[in-house]
Length: 354
Image (cartoon, rainbow, N blue to C red; front, top):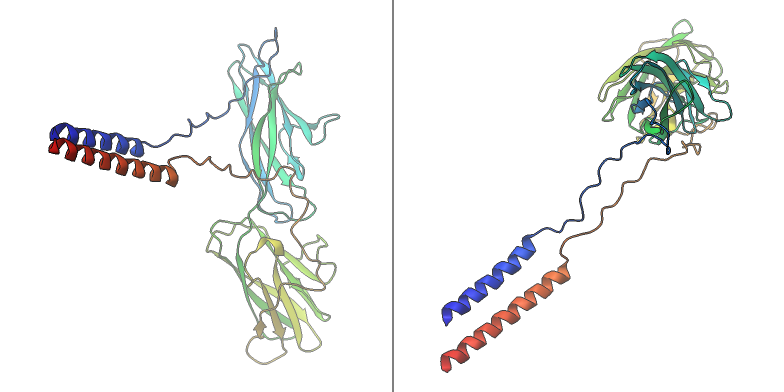
C-alpha cells in the first residue's frame, strides 16, 4: 500500500513541476511586413520597383545633409524606362541628384530617374537630402517613401525609408590666449568629442567686443551672430574621443579685452564645459587667463530646441504584453500541494491502523 501512495505523490509532484517549468508563449513573432504591388482586378502588377536605404544627416549642424540611395528594378520581361516617385517629410528637402523634377500639385514630392532598364535590370540613383528646419533639431526621425513608376505613369505601392537627424552629444571646449603683440593675438582652441559616436561638424562662436576682430579662420556669412562676433564652422568628421585643435587669430586694440568662445548649436550638447572666456592683455610674456562662463549670452540669440521637428517623430518602442506565471498562481499551487500531501498522509495512517 505504501508503494502506490509514494508513486502517486511523486507523479503529482512531477506533473506540477513540469507545468511550472514550461514557459508561457505570448505568440509567434510577427513576420516582417512585405510590400505588395498596388494591383487592381484585371490589371497586371507594376514591373518597375524602387527601394531606398536609411539616410543619416550630418555635417553643417544647422542644416545637416546626407546621401540617399534609391535602387530602381525592372521586374518585367521586357526593357522599359524606370522612374520613381520620391516623397520627403516636413523639414527635409532634396538638394541634388537623381534627375528629379517637382511633382505638380503634390508638396515635397518629386519624380526621378527615367533611364532605360533591360528586363531584370536595375539602376541605383544617388541623391542628397538636407534638413530644412528653421532651427537645428537633434535626435529625431522622419520617414520618406519611394515608389517605382513606368513610362505610362503606373506606379508600385510606396515603401518607406527612415531619415535620422544627428543625435545630441557631449563636446568639450578648452582654449588659451597668447599676449597681444603689435595689435594681434592668437587663441589656441581644443575641442574634444567626449561622446561615444562620430560627429560630422560643429560651430565655434567668438563674441568680439569693440576693438577685437577675428582675422583667421574665415567667419561664416550666415548672419547668425547678428554682427556681434564671428561664427567659425568646422565641417569635419570628429571621431569619438578625438580632439580638433586649431588657432584663432584676432586683431586687438585698446587695452585689455575679454573674448568669449562657445560651441554651437548650444541645444545639441548635454555637458556644461562648452564655453570659455579669455582675457587678452597687451605685451609681455605669457598667455591670457581663461575662465569658464555660463553658456547663455545676452547678445547672442538663444538656440532652443526647435518646435519644427520633422512631422513624423521617432516611433516609440512597443511594450510587450506581460506573460508567464504570476505570484498568485505560484501561491495557489503551493497550497494545493500542501493539502494533497496532508490528505495522503492521513489516508496512509488510517489504512495502517485498519
